[in-house]
Length: 408
Image (cartoon, rainbow, N blue to C red; front, side, top):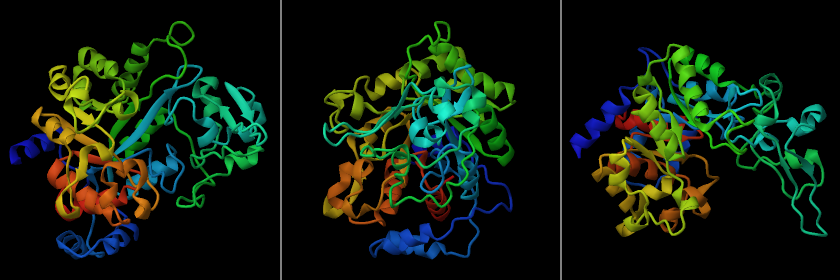
């Protein structure tokens, strides 16, 4: 176990915190400690203290910035993640009509993550304009606005908002005004959108590392008949080379295995650190993290193809253990046997956990009782599963934990 952990630590490298640099955690991590049931973990984390200096950690990976409270993939969200000590910061990458790369979770999410529908001149360019709900027929409100509908300049003129939409809305205003109660619009007055190049410059200036995710296109490829998937994948890497970023600081991601294999073949310095995102629970019929026969390809086959890091959702790595505990799943154990590094996503993406935690906690719902279980899960992921790091919508939580237990 120790040798395995040392190997994973070398893969990610040391934490990027600078001497004397302090992370700003705020009250939330300590609130979560207060919610833990009495026991050794609560004692350890409570002893960590409010008045010590916390430093940035590579274990703490920013998921889309800090979207628990800030509009995702905005400059403001990245700065918040940096201040909370995220050692690695994400940009999901999509392309515009003029083939420029931008930070957006999905190629076609502008109608839920920006103010485009309130901008008639730009809303007119959407793939599908706003259609109001019709209670009489049961029709839900809808729209579809894509980065590829706009030029880079048009994209950058938008304002980011909290990702949400009301499917029962009969007006654009109501459709846009749908932020869940457990998030906030307090910091949504400004949401500065970024190109991928601007994200690189910002994160480089902050002294952090990069994890760009090449988003699956939602338009036919080749785009406009000439822009191929491989050109898209290569453009992402080229922008790091052009900015003078060493491959050791970049962890490119994709849900498409073909992209990982492309990088391994065409740009192995970057490919060796590529993260294969696993969503087969939603895309492969019959997939079960407890049944290896349902995994195609299996862990050994992925390793043989050159994959080094595998990133599934949180719930696939754990299962209920004896006496209400949480333990590693078969999926996690088999990945470790195959020598694959693991990264989990995404902590703090669920609302309050009193009801079981939803999608991200589904495998351990019987033993989830409240928000303190966020830290209990994090402790199992670190101490027993041996993850390299954890994506979080609120990086202060993972930064706090990493500092307290000595994670890199």
